[in-house]
Image (cartoon, rainbow, N blue to C red; front, top):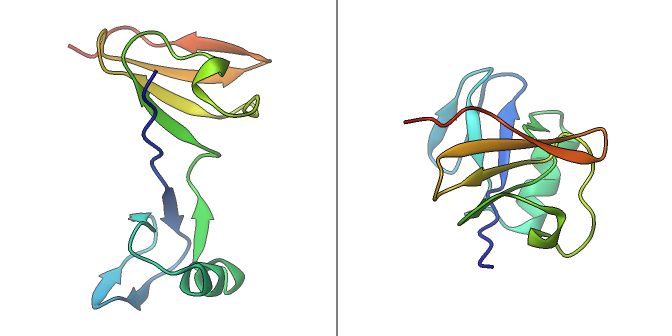
Length: 99
């Protein structure tokens, strides 16, 4: 099963980085940031994880899509059936199809 990680964070206040300005509440991808830049933004309180982890999978999301059992709050998207899954209480719960 192919897994695509989606590093997503939310800006806790306005800041400027990499030539872009982010407002409080903006979703920020850290894919273009070095480890030290990412650590600086988190340590300064500018970024907070939007979710613990997320994946895109073809079919129902399950623990097997991850290298280790993910924590509650982890999200995934089923690209075949167009459903969002959230891990809650140790199991995966799906939304209605988003079509």
